[in-house]
Image 1: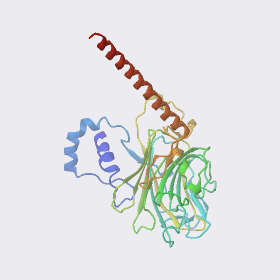
Image 2: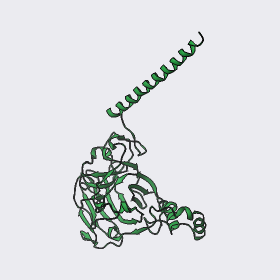
Image 3: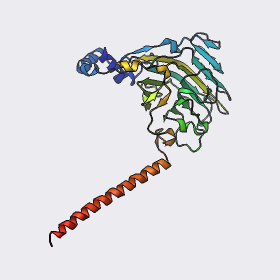
Image 4: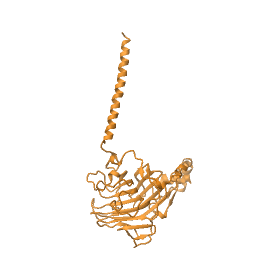
Length: 358
């Protein structure tokens, strides 16, 4: 069983989805191939424990057929603002100006390790850079609080994944649409004028708007590692977007999705949200932790503010700060001292050698 799970996760889990079940893993190899691989890799697979099995958590999932079509709520989910429930999708905003809408799960999530698959669609009549603003996916302490960040509150506690379609910063080099991640303990504010660049942990360009086929996003959080992947090319394959380690998220927060429009607009639709529990072996010490008391954060070696745009969607180091200049000068000074000491020693030895000849 461990070998089978390992093959599914690393060979097919992130690579392919089953065409008949959007967002779910593919069927895997044929029985003959599987048996050969099982015999060859069994001893190795037995050591793999991270993500050995997955279980759909219906209490945190939004799946067709929807219940409560035509109403302002449904079992397990609450709507807010311009959100409209149809038989085919949940529309967070119509293609109209100045609209905000959101959908939030009733139940707090107490899973330590999880994976979320989102089937979504962003589309409208606006031409290039004449549409906006995008969708935000949330795992936060507070729910159903409207605000300026894609229809939800600023200075939130938890995790946000922004699917941004409009570049507010005219000086940016990044290509939109753009997906970014932010983890907040309530102290950070999302800066729309800079497209959230100063609070962003990582991001990637993702062409998900006005596609003629289904578009999917997968978010995995396990053992402090946050991974975001996309399937936007109608190939039933996941493509890596974001991979961050050292992420701290508490349990007991709520999943949600929101969207907003301003002077520019789009239809922002959620077709399904599927949350899976990841079974991960933990030490007794880890199990004894009160995960509800953890403060959201990231063990990051450098501040996101030190990052500037890269056209590829990745980070590169920004301008030198005063602290960096000091470190460079200190290293240069140490280098000069070392060279001086080495030079003095070499010179002294040469002098002693020359004295022997006289």
